[in-house]
Length: 119
Image 1 (spheres, rainbow, N blue to C red):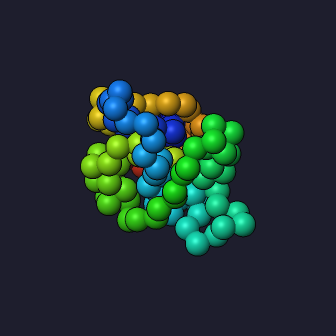
Image 2: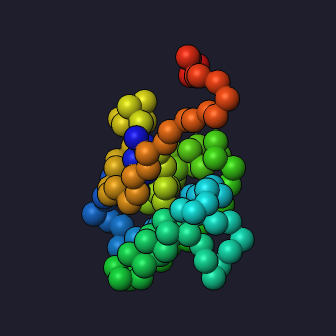
Image 3: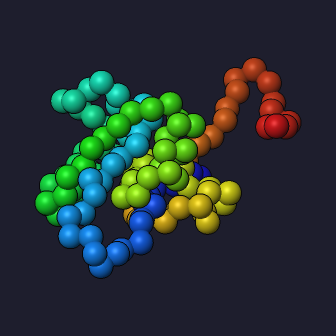
């Protein structure tokens, strides 16, 4: 079972800042959760974060990159998030996980031969 979560890397709050920085969502094309170049149907994860931003009166930009660049960008910017990312033991401590938005069970099957080993 894989869990896909909404996550954010929050910047420390400083008292002298009066105008919050723009929130940024770094995303990779990952149907059905995220669709690049599809403004009318951006995917469930993008719809969730943009709706939340509107309700909170926050300025959110959604930027698309290859997956490895998404992981790098979110670690380099404050007020940044990845709308959909598989939650794994290796990633657990690297991010602040905000909400589970999707759960997926994956199975491997074959018709012709028995799978004795996965890796």
